[in-house]
Amino acid sequence: MTPKTHRRVPLGSPIFPDRPPLSPEEKAKRKAENEAFAKRCRVIFDRVYPELVTEHYGWAIMIEPDRGDYFIDPDPEVAFQKARQKHPTALILEMRVNETGTCGRI
Image (cartoon, rainbow, N blue to C red; front, side):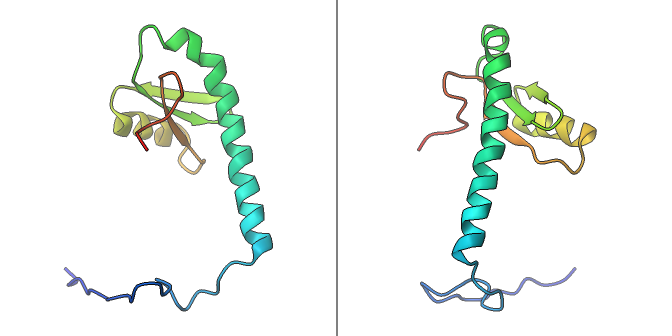
């Protein structure tokens, strides 16, 4: 087993200094892609929410928007494993079957 090495990173410095910082265009592109992905997932969530809320309130739901699949389970790890089993390389969004779809508190 390889021993762990601890690096102290001074406050305010980049964690990975060898990586160049992202350009503003790249940041905007990634933000737009993430928002589009979340919007596609939200459409699926809004479609299935009414039928799931009565029996599965508070359960984790993993959504794969490209194929329209979703996986639910009380345990988020199990739901994620179900999603990974069917779609091993796809992006998956985790939500909760509740009024807002959020997974935690802010």
